[in-house]
Length: 107
Image (tube, rainbow, N blue to C red; front, side):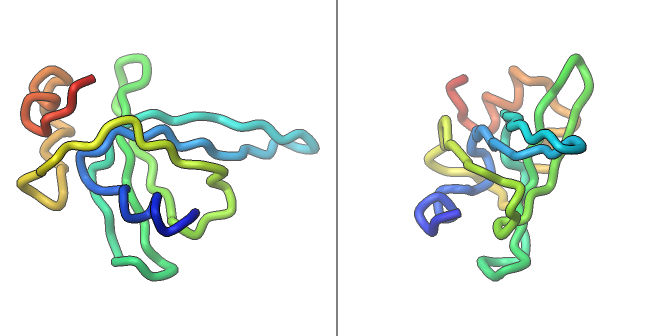
């Protein structure tokens, strides 16, 4: 992942993470679209970011390392101008409409 994308990944941003999934001898790509809740461990090789989405009425969170070879791309759909907190864990208990109001996403 390049440095420009790493700088744009911040809490509150709506992203689409494309990951490569290997099943036996086949390989396919899967997209996971969600809101970034947190970014941890700085900018080093162990840095991670947490993405949350609601899939079929169930909240799903995935933690991706920045240096993972599984990630084939990250696309930033939208990003808020300012977020009041560095960790947006409160979005787990808030409705989708209320979370857009709190974070300032226009999706």
